[in-house]
Image 1 (spheres, rainbow, N blue to C red):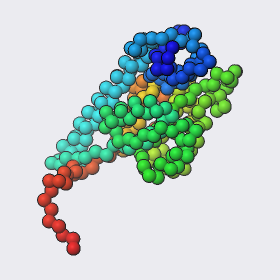
Image 2: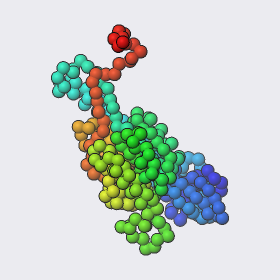
Image 3: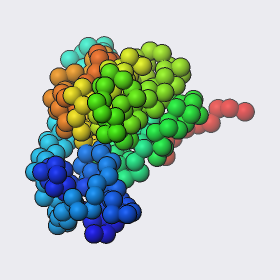
Length: 299
């Protein structure tokens, strides 16, 4: 067994595929390839699997991720048609012959996991969501937001990384924040963001990771959070929700049904409250300044 190997856990029925991050004294630190799960396990409990992940849960997550991406792209196509209809149907008087430009909501993404951050940023780019990402330890996220929010001025903040119900606390109390690895850190970050902007419609916050204290994150001021059912969430679920908010018009509410049913982890993985979108369109279409013929007028 070596660092970087793909493995599954015998004691959990080989349900999730992990990558070995470290080995010490016959204990391995392992990280989910698709799910935001960081765990430790005895080396003897691990089975190495081929480069193509073999666990059924991981395969289902990959299929659902492709479906979620297709749904987002379908939403974008439908939105383009709606925007064109605004011009063609004369709802904006005198604009029928004009072309518009788009201003999707800007995302500031803080992630406690560098590899998941890289995957997230690649998906933002694929979806053409303007985004800035930072790898930040969960305990430092609140301080980082105090510094970044006034500079970045995002429409959407994603606060995610690793979390989970602590194995050491038996019996655990799901109402108590002390039973969770990082929910308290996420709450501190949400509170820092809400000190910057109190309105849930002016700043959309997507927060949490695997098994996070969903109710406490919402009470702290998150618009969307994980995990209602205290389940493992997919690494890209926060990106899906942020992209959904980024491309939902400010004239509309983010479709909660889509968030509950079209995210990879489903309604037990992510939930939230009514939230206005942050996508704007403008008129007229922006010019290519290199082609403009301008007569200077200033002295």
